[in-house]
Image 1 (cartoon, rainbow, N blue to C red):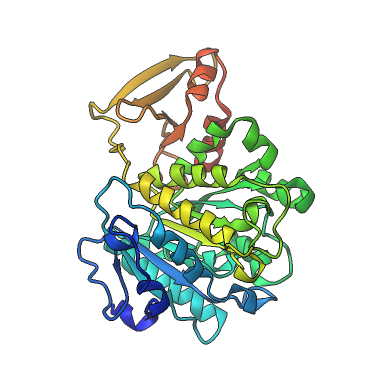
Image 2: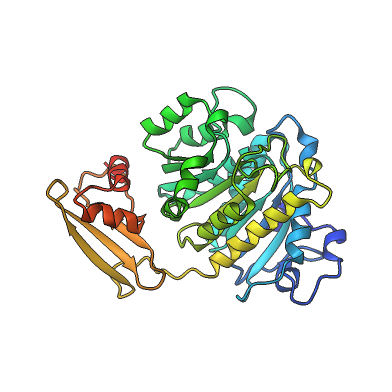
Length: 383
């Protein structure tokens, strides 16, 4: 597939700026005069410009480019980058064609073992991000960070796209997780739907009460979709629906760090940025650029092989007085992360890994003779 025909190069005003020798820009490949050679590339940055999923289309103009300006000026990390910025994906004739283009590009990159990072456009473009997994012939888990649950019965695409993902046929969605939603923006009926489907959901207040407990949820995701309206307006004013309450910029970067560290995660999307609502210093673009930076740093700090029979893991057996009588836990000797096993019975509905991410707190719960809620939810999904 010739990807070049789908992209516009990065504007000269961005690539001709005098960046420092140790800047992010000086250590990546980018689409300027020539399309970058993808051989050996591990991460591809893709700008998205289609905003037809929202009522205020013009407000999304130059979103990806404003983030680039901030990202390129950041200092490079300690790792040897193998990153390409492919430029901005050309929008399709209609929104459906844009979804298909995102799907095709994502499929092609992931076949080459390249992780795409999508920046810009409306949040409904994550539908194309999700569709890129359809040809993989496996079930995937998706995690969304958003102040609202976008499953309304009717409305603009950015308001209903999560429902489109869940109802898509053929169905290859194993789990859907919603982080940082705010109750006063969310219909309680939608929360009930999440619970009936055994999908994970964490309110902003719950997330704050025990922030580290969201890490296993992020570590279980194959793709992450992040709407910047989930970040409080003091830190990220660049969205028409920015709220005074929400994640801090620091928490958003921590989530991206967790996502980057996730060995199984293979795509990231950052959506919803509207530069016309940003402040004079383009604070939101700075926050998003830093989120990308932390995600990339996390990616280059991946340690775990996920080969649980290797010497990289210590196995713990916890006996219970009820069914199950035993729960197996695995702790990485490299990263200190935990997993637990949901036993197979031969009656599984899906072909799916049965060793799932968990936390040390889940291990402590089992030691007290209680079955961890995360284990119960996983079994309900599997069988």
